[in-house]
Length: 322
Image (tube, rainbow, N blue to C red):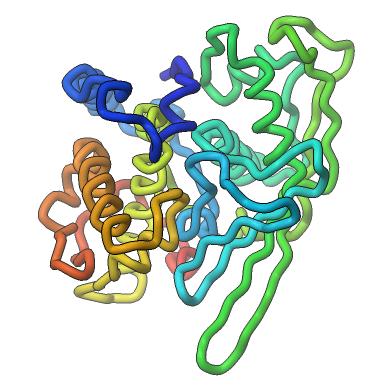
């Protein structure tokens, strides 16, 4: 399944006025078509079984470009885990929107599949777009390149904290990258492959804690970074409930808002808006994960989760997802 990337939809998730938003009926009809197409074949048989690493299922990239002062890092936190992202140069800022999410899913999937740190991006941007199953409408070439460079060159820091210990781990995504993509044309072929070398730390994190995804669902939801985040998060949380034997989990709305990459204000009005948008996108996610229907419930100040059938088969070692 390939997706025509809509530049506006993933860069203005929190800012578009109602008359600028895509028509809900049209979107719902497309999601239904995607659902029925996906239902015909399992992710494994369709060669659509993908992965995201555990960290990025819990705390996510921004949905829109963060309005941060120069030199300020972007942060999301679960309370026990904090994800910090810093740009390494003034040229490239913090990655945001759907493109880095799609690219990260491809990176994690390729690393899990090949068990290799060196990944080939192809000899042209068009070839890489084919690899990550995105179409380019011709207007997004520069933005596609920029978001990839932001992602490849960002420094990611993960901090863990509990009552006994504080631990910090730096997880730069790449050790090096060599990009030969033409700056103005997606079709110009280079004599050499563009390549990405993952850092040992990030590679080990991917291999040790892979969260299974159906890439067809991930792409179907890619008009909304929030929907993509909810799908990844919900899949991960259901694995955790199974692995730990929990019968009930309560996730405070305030905490959930702090995890996901929304720009919505930290005010009572902002929290109400977040809940409304989360539940709207959750309905889309549950279309593709019907077994979770009735197991995700708004309980006032928190979201209540109860175990259900897993969306995809669990890893052999279920402890990997904890």
